[in-house]
Image 1 (cartoon, rainbow, N blue to C red):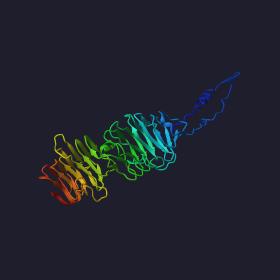
Image 2: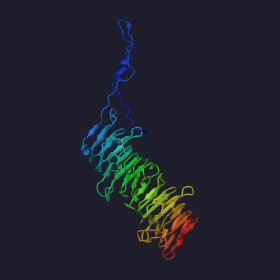
Image 3: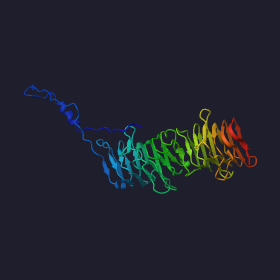
Image 4: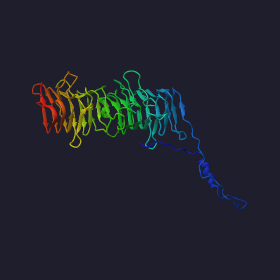
Length: 425
Protein backbone atom coordinates (compact mmCIF):
# COMPACT_ATOMS: atom_id res chain seq x y z
CA UNK A 1 0.00 0.00 0.00
CA UNK A 2 1.32 3.39 -0.92
CA UNK A 3 1.90 6.07 1.65
CA UNK A 4 -1.05 8.40 1.85
CA UNK A 5 -0.87 11.91 0.50
CA UNK A 6 -3.38 14.33 -0.92
CA UNK A 7 -3.00 16.38 -4.09
CA UNK A 8 -3.89 20.05 -3.57
CA UNK A 9 -5.78 21.75 -6.41
CA UNK A 10 -5.37 25.43 -7.33
CA UNK A 11 -8.69 26.93 -8.48
CA UNK A 12 -7.13 30.25 -9.46
CA UNK A 13 -4.49 28.65 -11.65
CA UNK A 14 -6.67 28.95 -14.78
CA UNK A 15 -7.01 32.73 -14.42
CA UNK A 16 -3.29 32.96 -13.86
CA UNK A 17 -2.53 31.05 -17.04
CA UNK A 18 -4.90 33.20 -19.10
CA UNK A 19 -3.05 36.29 -17.95
CA UNK A 20 0.19 34.84 -19.28
CA UNK A 21 -1.33 34.55 -22.74
CA UNK A 22 -1.64 38.36 -23.08
CA UNK A 23 1.98 38.92 -24.02
CA UNK A 24 1.88 40.88 -27.30
CA UNK A 25 -0.96 43.42 -27.07
CA UNK A 26 -0.42 46.77 -28.94
CA UNK A 27 -1.38 50.30 -28.04
CA UNK A 28 -1.36 52.90 -30.94
CA UNK A 29 0.98 50.68 -32.93
CA UNK A 30 3.52 50.45 -30.12
CA UNK A 31 4.27 46.98 -28.82
CA UNK A 32 3.94 46.80 -25.05
CA UNK A 33 6.36 44.88 -22.87
CA UNK A 34 4.69 41.90 -21.12
CA UNK A 35 4.08 42.53 -17.44
CA UNK A 36 6.35 40.93 -14.93
CA UNK A 37 4.66 38.03 -13.16
CA UNK A 38 5.50 35.80 -10.24
CA UNK A 39 6.25 32.25 -11.42
CA UNK A 40 4.87 30.74 -8.18
CA UNK A 41 1.15 29.85 -8.04
CA UNK A 42 -0.91 31.84 -5.59
CA UNK A 43 -1.15 30.36 -2.11
CA UNK A 44 -4.07 28.05 -1.43
CA UNK A 45 -5.80 28.24 1.91
CA UNK A 46 -6.25 24.76 3.38
CA UNK A 47 -9.48 24.03 5.22
CA UNK A 48 -9.93 22.45 8.65
CA UNK A 49 -11.60 19.03 9.01
CA UNK A 50 -15.37 18.74 9.37
CA UNK A 51 -16.32 17.83 12.94
CA UNK A 52 -19.16 15.30 12.91
CA UNK A 53 -21.97 15.14 15.45
CA UNK A 54 -22.38 11.90 17.40
CA UNK A 55 -25.66 11.11 15.63
CA UNK A 56 -24.26 11.83 12.17
CA UNK A 57 -24.40 8.17 11.12
CA UNK A 58 -28.03 7.60 12.08
CA UNK A 59 -28.90 7.95 8.38
CA UNK A 60 -27.27 6.93 5.09
CA UNK A 61 -23.98 8.72 4.48
CA UNK A 62 -21.35 9.08 1.75
CA UNK A 63 -18.03 10.53 2.92
CA UNK A 64 -16.05 12.31 0.22
CA UNK A 65 -12.47 13.43 -0.26
CA UNK A 66 -11.85 17.19 -0.25
CA UNK A 67 -8.37 17.93 -1.58
CA UNK A 68 -8.34 21.25 0.30
CA UNK A 69 -8.68 19.39 3.62
CA UNK A 70 -5.60 17.42 4.75
CA UNK A 71 -8.00 15.71 7.18
CA UNK A 72 -11.56 15.46 5.89
CA UNK A 73 -13.47 14.54 9.08
CA UNK A 74 -13.06 14.39 12.85
CA UNK A 75 -15.08 11.90 14.95
CA UNK A 76 -15.15 12.64 18.66
CA UNK A 77 -17.29 9.85 20.16
CA UNK A 78 -18.16 6.15 20.10
CA UNK A 79 -20.72 6.70 17.37
CA UNK A 80 -23.50 4.33 16.34
CA UNK A 81 -23.51 3.63 12.59
CA UNK A 82 -27.12 2.78 11.70
CA UNK A 83 -27.39 4.01 8.12
CA UNK A 84 -25.49 2.70 5.14
CA UNK A 85 -21.98 4.11 5.01
CA UNK A 86 -19.73 4.57 1.98
CA UNK A 87 -16.29 6.15 2.33
CA UNK A 88 -14.74 7.17 -0.98
CA UNK A 89 -11.09 6.98 -2.10
CA UNK A 90 -8.66 9.43 -0.54
CA UNK A 91 -10.74 10.24 2.53
CA UNK A 92 -8.85 10.90 5.77
CA UNK A 93 -10.72 10.51 9.08
CA UNK A 94 -9.22 11.14 12.48
CA UNK A 95 -10.70 9.95 15.77
CA UNK A 96 -10.36 11.57 19.16
CA UNK A 97 -9.41 9.60 22.25
CA UNK A 98 -11.65 6.50 22.76
CA UNK A 99 -13.83 7.43 19.78
CA UNK A 100 -14.73 4.89 17.12
CA UNK A 101 -17.40 3.24 15.00
CA UNK A 102 -20.05 0.93 16.47
CA UNK A 103 -21.48 -0.54 13.27
CA UNK A 104 -25.09 -1.64 13.73
CA UNK A 105 -26.55 -1.41 10.24
CA UNK A 106 -28.20 -4.83 9.76
CA UNK A 107 -28.38 -5.45 5.99
CA UNK A 108 -27.38 -1.94 4.88
CA UNK A 109 -24.02 -1.64 3.20
CA UNK A 110 -20.76 -0.76 4.96
CA UNK A 111 -18.13 0.15 2.38
CA UNK A 112 -14.70 1.69 2.99
CA UNK A 113 -13.28 1.47 -0.51
CA UNK A 114 -10.03 3.16 -1.38
CA UNK A 115 -7.78 2.53 -4.35
CA UNK A 116 -4.08 1.80 -4.69
CA UNK A 117 -3.51 5.40 -5.81
CA UNK A 118 -5.91 6.92 -3.27
CA UNK A 119 -6.09 4.78 -0.12
CA UNK A 120 -8.33 5.68 2.79
CA UNK A 121 -6.75 6.57 6.13
CA UNK A 122 -8.40 6.08 9.54
CA UNK A 123 -6.17 7.42 12.28
CA UNK A 124 -6.12 9.16 15.65
CA UNK A 125 -5.90 12.87 16.28
CA UNK A 126 -2.84 11.90 18.31
CA UNK A 127 -0.34 9.48 16.77
CA UNK A 128 0.14 7.14 19.70
CA UNK A 129 -0.61 3.45 20.04
CA UNK A 130 -4.07 2.71 21.36
CA UNK A 131 -5.39 6.26 21.09
CA UNK A 132 -8.86 5.72 19.63
CA UNK A 133 -11.16 2.79 20.19
CA UNK A 134 -11.55 1.08 16.81
CA UNK A 135 -14.32 -0.43 14.68
CA UNK A 136 -16.81 -3.02 15.95
CA UNK A 137 -19.25 -4.62 13.53
CA UNK A 138 -22.08 -6.00 15.63
CA UNK A 139 -24.83 -6.30 13.00
CA UNK A 140 -23.37 -6.31 9.49
CA UNK A 141 -25.13 -8.73 7.16
CA UNK A 142 -24.83 -7.21 3.71
CA UNK A 143 -22.66 -9.49 1.50
CA UNK A 144 -21.19 -6.38 -0.12
CA UNK A 145 -19.63 -5.09 3.11
CA UNK A 146 -16.05 -4.19 2.23
CA UNK A 147 -12.88 -2.59 3.53
CA UNK A 148 -10.33 -2.23 0.74
CA UNK A 149 -7.11 -0.27 0.20
CA UNK A 150 -7.42 1.23 3.67
CA UNK A 151 -4.95 1.97 6.45
CA UNK A 152 -6.21 1.80 10.04
CA UNK A 153 -3.75 2.98 12.68
CA UNK A 154 -3.43 3.89 16.39
CA UNK A 155 -6.70 2.23 17.49
CA UNK A 156 -7.35 -0.25 20.32
CA UNK A 157 -7.62 2.16 23.26
CA UNK A 158 -10.10 -0.10 25.11
CA UNK A 159 -12.25 -3.19 24.61
CA UNK A 160 -14.87 -2.88 21.90
CA UNK A 161 -17.49 -4.51 24.16
CA UNK A 162 -17.97 -3.97 27.87
CA UNK A 163 -19.47 -7.38 28.74
CA UNK A 164 -18.93 -11.01 27.79
CA UNK A 165 -18.07 -12.03 25.17
CA UNK A 166 -15.35 -9.43 25.04
CA UNK A 167 -14.17 -8.22 21.66
CA UNK A 168 -11.04 -6.15 21.42
CA UNK A 169 -8.54 -4.68 19.02
CA UNK A 170 -8.53 -2.33 16.06
CA UNK A 171 -11.29 -4.16 14.17
CA UNK A 172 -13.69 -6.86 15.36
CA UNK A 173 -16.60 -8.73 13.83
CA UNK A 174 -19.15 -10.14 16.27
CA UNK A 175 -20.14 -13.76 15.98
CA UNK A 176 -23.83 -14.49 15.47
CA UNK A 177 -25.67 -17.80 15.33
CA UNK A 178 -28.40 -18.59 12.84
CA UNK A 179 -29.36 -16.16 10.11
CA UNK A 180 -28.64 -13.73 8.70
CA UNK A 181 -24.89 -14.31 8.89
CA UNK A 182 -22.30 -11.60 9.29
CA UNK A 183 -20.46 -10.53 6.14
CA UNK A 184 -17.21 -8.67 5.50
CA UNK A 185 -14.44 -8.68 2.89
CA UNK A 186 -11.01 -7.30 3.74
CA UNK A 187 -8.57 -6.69 0.89
CA UNK A 188 -5.34 -4.67 0.94
CA UNK A 189 -5.94 -3.46 4.48
CA UNK A 190 -3.12 -2.31 6.77
CA UNK A 191 -3.69 -2.41 10.53
CA UNK A 192 -0.84 -0.89 12.51
CA UNK A 193 0.24 0.56 15.83
CA UNK A 194 -2.82 -0.61 17.74
CA UNK A 195 -2.97 -0.83 21.50
CA UNK A 196 -4.08 -4.48 21.56
CA UNK A 197 -5.12 -7.13 19.01
CA UNK A 198 -5.11 -6.31 15.32
CA UNK A 199 -8.20 -8.25 14.18
CA UNK A 200 -10.60 -10.00 16.55
CA UNK A 201 -12.64 -12.63 14.66
CA UNK A 202 -12.79 -15.13 17.52
CA UNK A 203 -16.59 -15.25 17.57
CA UNK A 204 -17.39 -15.83 13.91
CA UNK A 205 -18.79 -19.15 12.74
CA UNK A 206 -18.69 -20.98 9.42
CA UNK A 207 -22.01 -19.46 8.32
CA UNK A 208 -20.32 -16.04 8.12
CA UNK A 209 -19.51 -14.64 4.67
CA UNK A 210 -15.98 -13.50 5.41
CA UNK A 211 -12.86 -13.32 3.25
CA UNK A 212 -9.44 -11.72 3.64
CA UNK A 213 -6.45 -11.13 1.38
CA UNK A 214 -3.34 -8.97 1.19
CA UNK A 215 -3.48 -7.81 4.80
CA UNK A 216 -0.55 -6.22 6.64
CA UNK A 217 -0.93 -6.36 10.42
CA UNK A 218 2.06 -5.00 12.31
CA UNK A 219 3.18 -2.85 15.22
CA UNK A 220 0.25 -3.86 17.46
CA UNK A 221 0.60 -4.53 21.19
CA UNK A 222 -0.92 -8.04 21.11
CA UNK A 223 -1.37 -10.81 18.54
CA UNK A 224 -2.20 -9.82 14.95
CA UNK A 225 -5.30 -12.05 14.72
CA UNK A 226 -7.67 -13.91 17.03
CA UNK A 227 -9.99 -16.31 15.23
CA UNK A 228 -12.10 -19.42 15.78
CA UNK A 229 -10.89 -22.81 14.50
CA UNK A 230 -13.94 -22.93 12.23
CA UNK A 231 -12.80 -19.82 10.38
CA UNK A 232 -9.00 -19.83 10.61
CA UNK A 233 -8.83 -20.89 6.96
CA UNK A 234 -10.13 -17.50 5.71
CA UNK A 235 -6.66 -16.08 6.43
CA UNK A 236 -3.93 -17.05 4.00
CA UNK A 237 -0.34 -16.44 3.01
CA UNK A 238 -1.12 -13.44 0.79
CA UNK A 239 -1.02 -11.51 4.08
CA UNK A 240 1.70 -10.57 6.57
CA UNK A 241 1.14 -10.95 10.33
CA UNK A 242 4.62 -10.26 11.72
CA UNK A 243 6.08 -7.34 13.62
CA UNK A 244 3.65 -7.28 16.57
CA UNK A 245 4.31 -7.62 20.29
CA UNK A 246 3.17 -11.28 20.13
CA UNK A 247 3.67 -12.74 16.68
CA UNK A 248 1.21 -15.63 16.78
CA UNK A 249 -1.91 -16.37 14.77
CA UNK A 250 -4.19 -17.16 17.70
CA UNK A 251 -6.84 -19.91 17.38
CA UNK A 252 -9.11 -19.40 20.36
CA UNK A 253 -11.44 -21.65 22.35
CA UNK A 254 -14.63 -20.40 20.69
CA UNK A 255 -16.21 -22.48 17.87
CA UNK A 256 -13.47 -25.07 18.01
CA UNK A 257 -15.22 -27.72 15.89
CA UNK A 258 -14.43 -28.33 12.22
CA UNK A 259 -17.62 -30.03 11.02
CA UNK A 260 -19.22 -30.23 7.57
CA UNK A 261 -16.17 -28.35 6.24
CA UNK A 262 -13.09 -29.06 4.16
CA UNK A 263 -10.44 -26.50 5.06
CA UNK A 264 -6.70 -25.86 4.78
CA UNK A 265 -4.36 -24.11 7.17
CA UNK A 266 -1.54 -22.61 5.14
CA UNK A 267 2.00 -21.74 6.10
CA UNK A 268 1.96 -18.19 7.49
CA UNK A 269 4.81 -15.86 8.36
CA UNK A 270 4.06 -16.42 12.07
CA UNK A 271 3.22 -19.62 14.00
CA UNK A 272 -0.34 -20.67 14.80
CA UNK A 273 -1.08 -20.64 18.54
CA UNK A 274 -3.84 -23.06 19.56
CA UNK A 275 -5.43 -22.23 22.91
CA UNK A 276 -7.27 -25.51 23.51
CA UNK A 277 -9.02 -28.32 21.62
CA UNK A 278 -9.59 -28.34 17.86
CA UNK A 279 -12.23 -31.01 17.25
CA UNK A 280 -12.51 -32.45 13.72
CA UNK A 281 -15.82 -34.29 13.53
CA UNK A 282 -18.70 -35.28 11.25
CA UNK A 283 -17.69 -34.57 7.63
CA UNK A 284 -14.92 -32.29 8.79
CA UNK A 285 -11.60 -32.39 6.94
CA UNK A 286 -8.52 -30.38 7.94
CA UNK A 287 -5.29 -30.22 5.94
CA UNK A 288 -2.24 -28.55 7.47
CA UNK A 289 0.05 -27.50 4.65
CA UNK A 290 3.82 -27.72 4.26
CA UNK A 291 5.88 -25.31 6.33
CA UNK A 292 3.17 -24.47 8.85
CA UNK A 293 4.22 -24.18 12.49
CA UNK A 294 1.64 -24.93 15.17
CA UNK A 295 2.28 -24.17 18.81
CA UNK A 296 -0.08 -25.44 21.50
CA UNK A 297 -0.84 -24.33 25.00
CA UNK A 298 -0.63 -27.10 27.68
CA UNK A 299 -4.31 -28.16 27.38
CA UNK A 300 -4.48 -27.82 23.60
CA UNK A 301 -4.67 -30.72 21.14
CA UNK A 302 -6.06 -31.86 17.78
CA UNK A 303 -8.89 -34.40 17.90
CA UNK A 304 -10.03 -36.14 14.69
CA UNK A 305 -12.77 -38.16 16.40
CA UNK A 306 -16.50 -38.63 15.96
CA UNK A 307 -17.65 -41.41 18.25
CA UNK A 308 -18.56 -44.15 15.75
CA UNK A 309 -17.79 -45.71 12.38
CA UNK A 310 -21.29 -45.27 10.99
CA UNK A 311 -21.62 -44.92 7.22
CA UNK A 312 -21.28 -41.32 6.16
CA UNK A 313 -19.50 -40.41 9.36
CA UNK A 314 -16.42 -39.18 7.55
CA UNK A 315 -13.62 -36.99 8.88
CA UNK A 316 -9.90 -36.64 8.37
CA UNK A 317 -6.72 -34.90 9.42
CA UNK A 318 -3.92 -34.53 6.90
CA UNK A 319 -0.58 -33.08 7.98
CA UNK A 320 1.30 -32.75 4.72
CA UNK A 321 4.79 -31.38 5.03
CA UNK A 322 7.68 -31.87 2.66
CA UNK A 323 11.34 -32.75 3.17
CA UNK A 324 12.25 -29.07 2.75
CA UNK A 325 9.25 -27.70 4.64
CA UNK A 326 8.10 -30.04 7.39
CA UNK A 327 5.09 -29.22 9.56
CA UNK A 328 6.13 -28.45 13.14
CA UNK A 329 3.86 -29.21 16.11
CA UNK A 330 5.29 -28.16 19.47
CA UNK A 331 4.53 -26.84 22.95
CA UNK A 332 4.15 -23.08 23.21
CA UNK A 333 5.79 -23.13 26.64
CA UNK A 334 8.51 -25.53 25.51
CA UNK A 335 7.32 -28.10 28.07
CA UNK A 336 4.13 -29.91 27.04
CA UNK A 337 0.88 -29.98 25.06
CA UNK A 338 -1.78 -32.62 24.53
CA UNK A 339 -1.05 -34.26 21.19
CA UNK A 340 -3.19 -35.89 18.49
CA UNK A 341 -6.30 -37.89 19.49
CA UNK A 342 -7.60 -40.13 16.66
CA UNK A 343 -10.82 -42.08 17.16
CA UNK A 344 -13.01 -44.20 14.86
CA UNK A 345 -12.03 -42.33 11.70
CA UNK A 346 -11.65 -44.67 8.75
CA UNK A 347 -10.58 -41.99 6.28
CA UNK A 348 -7.12 -41.51 4.82
CA UNK A 349 -5.54 -39.71 7.75
CA UNK A 350 -1.89 -38.94 7.12
CA UNK A 351 1.05 -37.39 8.90
CA UNK A 352 3.89 -36.85 6.44
CA UNK A 353 7.14 -34.94 6.94
CA UNK A 354 6.26 -33.60 10.38
CA UNK A 355 8.13 -32.88 13.60
CA UNK A 356 6.16 -33.60 16.78
CA UNK A 357 7.73 -32.26 19.97
CA UNK A 358 6.82 -32.13 23.68
CA UNK A 359 3.41 -33.86 23.31
CA UNK A 360 2.52 -35.35 26.71
CA UNK A 361 -0.64 -37.25 25.85
CA UNK A 362 -3.01 -35.30 28.11
CA UNK A 363 -6.56 -35.07 26.74
CA UNK A 364 -9.10 -33.46 29.09
CA UNK A 365 -12.00 -34.97 27.10
CA UNK A 366 -11.96 -38.53 28.41
CA UNK A 367 -9.63 -37.66 31.29
CA UNK A 368 -6.63 -39.24 29.58
CA UNK A 369 -3.25 -38.30 31.04
CA UNK A 370 0.33 -39.30 30.37
CA UNK A 371 -0.48 -41.41 27.32
CA UNK A 372 1.16 -40.60 23.99
CA UNK A 373 1.78 -37.99 21.34
CA UNK A 374 -0.65 -39.89 19.07
CA UNK A 375 -3.59 -41.49 20.89
CA UNK A 376 -5.47 -44.15 18.90
CA UNK A 377 -9.01 -45.21 19.85
CA UNK A 378 -11.08 -47.85 18.02
CA UNK A 379 -8.43 -48.67 15.38
CA UNK A 380 -8.44 -45.50 13.26
CA UNK A 381 -6.85 -45.55 9.80
CA UNK A 382 -3.61 -43.59 9.87
CA UNK A 383 -0.40 -43.35 7.85
CA UNK A 384 2.65 -41.77 9.47
CA UNK A 385 5.75 -41.33 7.35
CA UNK A 386 9.02 -39.38 7.37
CA UNK A 387 8.23 -37.90 10.78
CA UNK A 388 10.39 -37.06 13.80
CA UNK A 389 9.12 -37.63 17.35
CA UNK A 390 11.20 -35.57 19.74
CA UNK A 391 11.36 -34.94 23.51
CA UNK A 392 8.33 -37.03 24.53
CA UNK A 393 8.20 -38.01 28.19
CA UNK A 394 5.66 -40.77 27.48
CA UNK A 395 4.89 -42.64 24.24
CA UNK A 396 4.96 -41.76 20.57
CA UNK A 397 1.91 -44.00 19.82
CA UNK A 398 -0.62 -45.04 22.44
CA UNK A 399 -3.33 -47.52 21.39
CA UNK A 400 -6.54 -48.07 23.34
CA UNK A 401 -8.55 -51.02 21.98
CA UNK A 402 -8.04 -54.56 20.74
CA UNK A 403 -5.31 -54.60 18.07
CA UNK A 404 -4.99 -50.80 18.38
CA UNK A 405 -2.31 -50.45 15.68
CA UNK A 406 -4.06 -52.68 13.14
CA UNK A 407 -4.82 -49.81 10.73
CA UNK A 408 -1.63 -47.83 11.33
CA UNK A 409 1.01 -47.73 8.60
CA UNK A 410 4.40 -46.25 9.43
CA UNK A 411 7.65 -45.67 7.55
CA UNK A 412 10.87 -43.72 7.99
CA UNK A 413 10.20 -42.57 11.56
CA UNK A 414 12.83 -41.06 13.85
CA UNK A 415 12.52 -41.16 17.65
CA UNK A 416 14.68 -38.72 19.64
CA UNK A 417 14.53 -38.65 23.43
CA UNK A 418 11.24 -40.56 23.54
CA UNK A 419 10.00 -42.51 26.59
CA UNK A 420 8.54 -45.37 24.53
CA UNK A 421 7.60 -45.85 20.91
CA UNK A 422 4.40 -47.96 21.06
CA UNK A 423 2.30 -48.36 24.19
CA UNK A 424 -1.01 -49.91 25.28
CA UNK A 425 -2.83 -49.71 28.64
